[in-house]
Image (tube, rainbow, N blue to C red; front, side, top):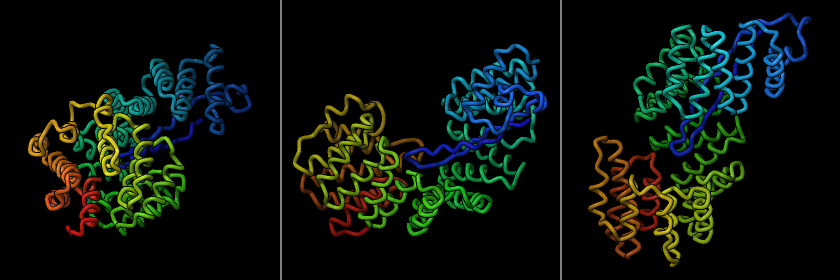
Length: 426
């Protein structure tokens, strides 16, 4: 008997990329239905809930009556149920017990790799996926999942190679296209990313994730109408997908439609009230809409939910000072990691560095990283300069942020909004 295959969607904030990792089905050798006890029916049956599977497999394991292969299957199935419930520590423990009893079951390694990946232990995940591939080189799941793990580690070329191999094994499976699109997006190759997302949509038009992801790629390319259309489609497919509302808020903000941006951010907050990003984005939209009181309320809430975010702290300082309120930045630095970027920007605001020193600190061997940091330095430097009343110099700095800055950065949109408020173009 077979436990059902499940697909886990994991959508991250910030860069707003989505990735899919696959639970592998586990074959179970068990008594015929007529001979099964109630516990065996729950443990081995496809119709059982996760809680029933866990309870039934626990009884099967404790009974001591199963042979090695069936006992391994009980551990595997209970591990699968724990994984579905997000209890990855128990999932790893059960898969490990099952593997000791049946070390040739490739899909158990795939599933334990998935549990490790969800725990953030990508090295162990990769080792398990590699073993699964050795045991069954024609299985799509471990290639797809290993590609996800390589992307998480920043090894983008290997990630693309694994996703491509998964596609070659099953060209009709949408998930590896979506994942490869995410890797191309991370490499800055948005045209290839869009092509992969489009293929994923063609293969599975009911999945909201590739629409959400393609919308992000269109947003970065400056194709805001296409971005809004994709986010809208993602929302229609999954009205509870807070990330799609948050993303559409960002796209509407880029179009200068602050009212619609605020409405979408409000919906994202309603769906996920513990996510600081919703309040942060709505706070910025309110700021540029001239609603400083509402902006401060949102940014304060974002700070409460994400006290370690340097960017929230910077924006709260901008809003406080625009409202003639005292700075809270010195206190905020107690929780912010001041050893890494954008700590030099914070030191600029604290009067400890000049803008020239911040731009020097933005230097990085990676051209993409440097480009983003310089954009941030120019934008936040422009805000500080504007606070001091030097509008011409602020306009120049905001112009630099938009001229050379990545369109995927909030500072690009924020600098564009400030230029519009100052009556300048970019």
